[in-house]
Image 1 (cartoon, one colour):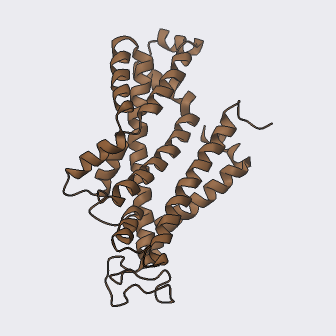
Image 2 (cartoon, rainbow, N blue to C red):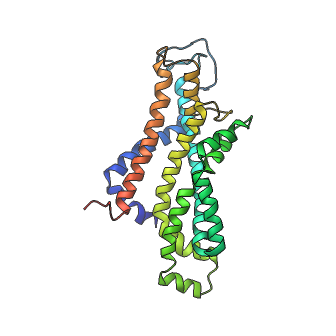
Image 3 (cartoon, rainbow, N blue to C red):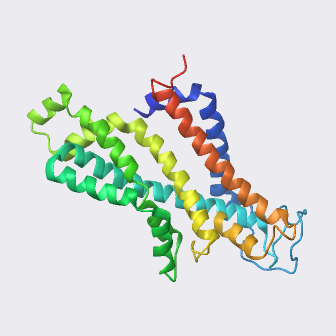
Length: 280
């Protein structure tokens, strides 16, 4: 299934460009700390030094190495993005598939919950929840973000699976006595695999942007470092006003490049798998 899914994508220029950019940051986040063994929290006397041979991206107010912070920040931000995406995809798939299969009261109840979450200003709720937590690790931030991204996906796959439920092979499975779980995993989920993967990419994007937004207002992870936390430190120390470009430019460019690459990947997938947008 995955071979059939990715083979046409490899012929799409947009997908290759977006995936290459994202893969670069993914490899940098995964393997960068292995090759660049510098503690991002270690303070030195080299305060606010511009890029040099000793510190390729300079240092901050406390003499901490910016490149080390960037590498570890990319890893944490991607981890939050992936984890929040998994949470959102799991909840959305559960709600959407069971609504389509069960119908009736179960469908109405699940869709009522979905509509409530959908109309709730998620970022404000995330800010409210995070503000009451004295300690926030990256997993907790990912959980907060993942709990509010799924409604649009649940509604979309419910609508798709409603039409799939009327097909003959699904009727045959029901007549054969398939349980709801077997019906979902064998007959329904394969039909939405490409859409689910495209949505997963968007969920990652939302998780990374959400973490950066929370961190900028001081409600991000209280442990470790992320791209959002780097920007928060730069803002607090007025790096922009004082012209310390090597402090705020790398995390800002990284966030823009990662999120833009994910949007390009999603757009390319939509062009390949959506017949209305497919280029002749």
